[in-house]
Amino acid sequence: MSEKIILVWFRNDLRVHDNEILLEATRKADKILPVYCFDPHYFTKTKSGYKTGNIRARFLLQSVANLREKLQALGGDLLIVYGNPAEQIPQLAEQYQVSEVYHHREVAFEETNISEEIEAALWKMKLNLKHFIGHTLYHKEDLPFPIKDIPDSFNTFKKKVERDSSVRPCLTIPKHIATPVIADAGELPTLEQLGLTEPVPDPRASFKFEGGETTGLQQLENYFAVNAIAAGGKANRNAASSKLSAWLALGCVSPRQVYWEIINHGQSAHNHPLMLELLWRDYFRFMFKKYSRRFFEAEGFKTEAPELATNQEELFEQWKTGNTGLPFIDASMHELNATGFISNVSRQAVSAYLVKTLKVNWTWGARWFEEKLIDYSPASNWGNWAYIAGVGNDPRENRYFSPKNLADLDPKGEYAKLWLTEENVA
Image (tube, rainbow, N blue to C red; front, side):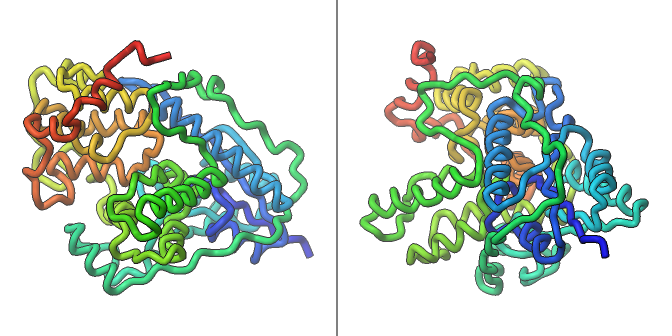
């Protein structure tokens, strides 16, 4: 009898802990074929720059490299290919005589379209593409309502989920991984091969991001250690930013792992600052499942798009380059462009300013964030922008940052001074 081989297609789940497709495949198959495919579509040029900027691309490369190391430590390997997944995955399935393909289901239309193309190609080969749900804190099947009935109000969603749902335990790491003989596992591409340049380190950055499960779990541990010290060992409602979003976006760290770390540190998840971030993340993913493409349309859930300025191209250029004349806005954009990361307060402020004050098409801002943010995730990014633009899930449409209260965000001007002083750049 021939051995059963399952192809495990990694996408935004670059970890070995709490990874259902990996663990399930090792239990169901004699051997597994772990695969990561670099899709050239995500590295194409756009009108304003690139679909994926070099800072985020570098973080991705580091994360894939670390995944390969983790798999090798378990006795396996990661097969790396470059090309259209709809062509590469079926070809590999045929080459290695695969019995089935596993992957985690995505929610944004580009990603789901790719899955559908692969599923159709595999179907012709009489092979199954098995979908798993592994990107959210709460499993879809454990929600107190079906996806089609998810409340359009976040607060209603939050109250019902916290009251009626529970978080599943984390899954264990496979003890051993056996792979078929892989003649050529492929090389990790360079940024240059992806059509990008190496990012220039900025000495003003207060935090250094390095991709991978190893550093993600270390950052999770550091977060609790630092904030426990600051709060005298107790839960700290004013805890410093976890900076975990980049690792969560690529699935180097699972949301459930974060939740159970809160519990393991003897803290209440209900009142913990990280829980609000995880719940918003869940909410946007579920809303994408419910509404799909509407999050990418200028009018969103409304009948018409927000009002636009006649010179919006000029205004957008000033905004994205940090030349609006407003210190906090400009400093935030300089930091974003230099490091790929800004605080949530900065994100809310620059987004609201672009849409509400400058009256520029909000989808332009969302695409700029898509290129620049190291922690870009389709649902969170586009969901947040639609929320700010008043065409998403926010019932309080007129609540946004205005120029008169921007000064309150940087009362001493220290942040603006740091990021608007060019001689600080190496």
